[in-house]
Length: 304
Image 1 (cartoon, helix red, strand yellow):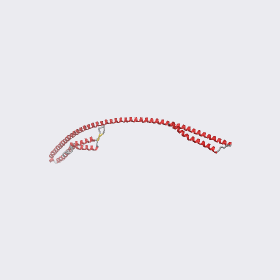
Image 2 (cartoon, rainbow, N blue to C red):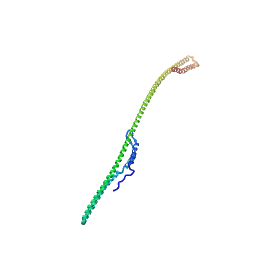
Image 3 (cartoon, rainbow, N blue to C red):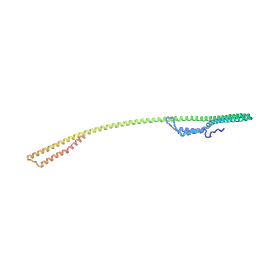
Image 4 (tube, helix red, strand yellow):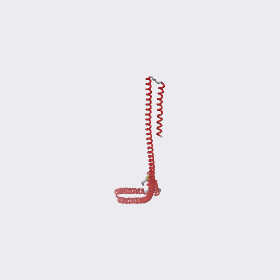
């Protein structure tokens, strides 16, 4: 039989614990999702460590599987050898039967060979069973030890994770409490600013009403003054028209008198007609110049 493969020195429980520590460090340093118990881990690094952890398990499991396969192979070989021995014994027996002189010896030797083959087969089967049972028991013991260490470390990780989760929950609650306080302060400050803005808006609205009232009053006063000025202008225009009408009447009378004198043979001199025209023109100019001055004086007295 071939010797069983022994586990390498570098693949012991210490390596498994170191790799479990690395896996724990990756989980603890990973990004935690707020308000949940989940974390985001590096998939590639985690798979690599899990592969190393799988490689670090004792090779007894693989050895046990190999031993089982070897046991099957031994049984198969024993059966094959037994059948081959039986086949050879039968052939030899047939040859011995053909030779009558050595028939008994051949039968005896055939029986002996059959017994030896059966004994050898039984020995091989027993050895294979014992080796497989021993390797299987060793693998079970090592696997139980690894499972014990893994369960202990897993329990420790669960405790540390629960403590850190509780600590993070408390920190989140404190941050939530501080956030609520800050939000309340902001709301109070917003209400205060809103009240100040409302007061400022009311003041501006009141000033606007007062300014509108003053402007409206001033506009009414200007409208009244404009109406009065228009009336004065109409009155002045009427006076100017009446003065011009009187002047025209005087000129008409003068012309009539002149025409009547010419008819009567008393033609006035050129100096008299010219003087009459100049006096009429001077009266019209004086009335036209004094009218605006008198109108402005009236407006100044009203404004005062």
